[in-house]
Length: 96
Image 1 (spheres, helix red, strand yellow):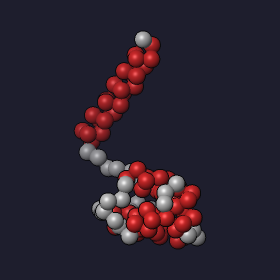
Image 2: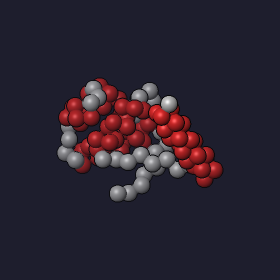
Image 3: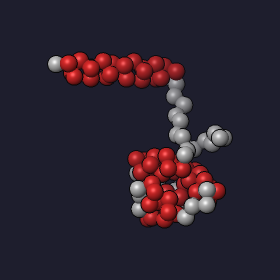
């Protein structure tokens, strides 16, 4: 796997198209297996700015593409703390 920087929806669309074609998949076949419409697939590959992120994540997962975000160290630490607090709160709520 090679990292590829995404700076806009068009970049993501180009990646989706390249991986789809390399995998020998047609747009409509990928759309069906990813649970999105053919029109959505077309729009995503063309870089439509209003493409829904949740659906894009479904397509990426179907293609075996991991989406990784590089975030600042201090934000990462805060995120880890907030996740731990959420787990703790959920476990406390489950006991009550």
